[in-house]
Each structure stands twice: as structure tokens, then as C-alpha cells.
Amino acid sequence: MKLKIKITLCCVLLAGSASAQKVNINQAFAAAAKQTDVLVKNVDSARLVKPNLVSPRTVEKGQFKMVVSRDWTSGFFPAELWYFYEYTKDKKWLDLAKKYTADIKKEQYNRGTHDLGFMIYCPFGNGYRLTKDTAYKSVIIQAAKSLSTRFNKTAGVLKSWDHNGDKWKYPVIIDNMMNLELLFEATKMTGDSSFYKIAVSHADNTIKNHFRPDFSSYHVVDYDTLQAGNILQKITAQGYANESAWARGQAWALYGYTLCFRETKNNKYLSQADGIAGFILNNEITPADGIPYWDYNDPDIPNVPRDASAAAITASALYELAKYSGNGKKYKAAADKILYFLNKNCTSKIGDNYGFILEHSTGHLPAKSEIDVPINYADYYYLEALLRSK
Ligand code: GLY
Image 1 (tube, rainbow, N blue to C red):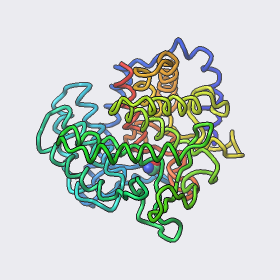
Image 2 (cartoon, protein in one colour):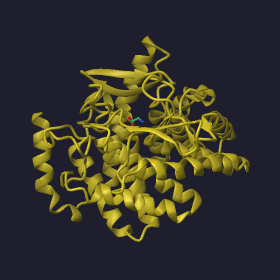
Image 3 (spheres, protein in one colour):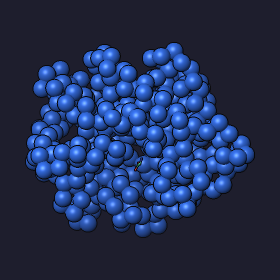
């Protein structure tokens, strides 16, 4: 709690001059690389004891937590290694990236999750982009085939979760927008437009059903698969309340529609991304450093945790959206500011936190899980934002 208060005060004091402040990318990458050296050592030690735990996820109650390859976050660690290789061109990172990417390969056949974009596209997509290794390409195509099996024609969307069938019938979460990139890519790779069509249908129905008039998003929409257009319920699983705006969900939405515009050039997706950016950036509840509270509508704000992961995803998305939107200057300045404060106030001391780069993310507060902790996807999108800021 002490640390939280210190951070808030510090951020507010510094925010006034933030426009003049930019992260030194070289220094930020060098520090992140040193931390990741520590992380890799911890990963290797943990794997000696439990080889099926392939990827580092978080630190909870002081414990280093590794996950199996079917965990939705398994791809972020190898994907980070690709970003280090991209930035440094150092073979050390290439070798590490190849080694840890291979551990996730079998998930290309996983039909039990919508998260294949995160799990497969983040590591294999970056791996393919940087090496043109055709083995990576076939993993991406197979993963897109697996993901496509989760599409229901009547509902017109991909199913997110198979669990908790007593709570919902055909749940679609806003996070699912992130997995469309895998489908767009598979169409480019194969010439088979079915992946593209599924992605567009999912994105269109999500615009229709997931958003409120102020462009904030529900977390979970439960679809009727018997009658097109029928919605059973709009609720939350990870947010404060059904009608609240869970911070990471807003960030996923922003990133998702930005990538949909990139892949389709359909202005409807650009307008949607602009609207979401407006919700995030004009929201006065967020402290001046741009790092949101975990949920925009928690009544206990300001005495609640922040979510650095939402900030990192937002910064990365804004750098890309800045290239397409008439509000480009504003978005770039906002992304610079967020990145500046993530770097200044949320980076771990070298050697701390088992080697995770950022602190202060919130995974699943209602489940009392991963609150104010380091988490792998925050680190991944932070590195991506650093790369994009150039
Ligand atoms: N996709 C799950 C999360 O953002 O926590």
C-alpha cells in the first residue's frame, strides 16, 4: 500500500512536465534485457524441477509462478525474447527465442481455447516475421484452423471459454479481439479467405454487442447460438461489476480494433478504435501518469490497485493507431507519457521480482488472484511499445 501511495504522488507531481519527457529507448531496453537474463536463469532452474512448466507467468505471494504450455499466457515469454532479438540482433536472443518458442508448438492443435492468438501468434508470428522460417508459418496456419473451429455461424462469433458452463452458454470476451490477428495472418499466408471472414464477422458482431454508447466495453457477452442476434446476457468475470469498465478489457478493445483497421482498412474499425481511445484518454478517473486503476468504476478509487498491463497494451496500441488516425499526435503523446511513467515508476529493480520487467499489474482481482504483481503480458506489451515508439 505504501508503495502505491508513493507511486501515485510521484506520478501526479511529474505529470505536468511529462510532455517533455520521453523514455530513453536504449537504456530501457538494456535494463529490460538485464532483468530478462535473470528471468531466463530462474526459468531454467524451475524447469529442472518441473520440466512441463515452460513459461514464467507472475510472482504471487513472493513465489515465482511458471505455467504449462496450455496456459493462455505461455507465449508471452518466448515472444519477449523475439523482441530482444529484433532490437539487438544478438544471436544470444535468437537462440533463446527459438528454444522457448518450441515449447509452445503443440498448442497449435488446441481447440479448447480462443487464446491461440496470444499463445501461438505472439511467439510464432514474431518468429516468422523475423526469420521467415517456414516451420513457424505452418504452426500459425494450423493454429488458425484450430481457432476457426470455435466459430459459430448463427452467433457469428468465436467462442471464448469452455469453462463454467453453468454461468453462460456461449461466452465471448472482449479479449477475444486480440486473437483475430492470427486469422488475418493465416489468410495472407494461405490465400484462404475463410479465416479473414471469421475475423471480420467476429469484429462486426463485437462492435454491435460489446460496447456502450461511451465506447466502454462489457467484459463478457453471452450469445444465443440458436437465434442470430439474440444476446443472453452482458456481464463481467474479471471486472468490478457487470456495468463497469474493466481496465484491461478496454485496452484489449483498443488494440483489437486498431489491428482490424490495419488488416482491412475498413474505416468502421478506425472509428471504433478512435472511440475507445477517447474513452481511455479522456477518462478523468485515471491518474495523470496514464496508468489506469484496475477497473474504471471501482467505488474505492483511489485506494485500489492499478493495472500496468492495461497501460502497456494501451501504449502499444496507441503508437500504431497514431499512424492511422487524425488524432495521431495526441495518441503518440499519450503513448509517450504512459511509457515514460511505466519505465519510471513500474520497472523492477534489476534482480528483483525473479526477473520480470514491470510491477503493478492486476490479473484477476475478483478472484483475489494476481493483484499488484509483475505479469508476463505486461512485460511483452511494454517491450512492444518501446519498439513501436521508435
Ligand atoms: N485474457 C485474460 C486477461 O486479460 O486477463
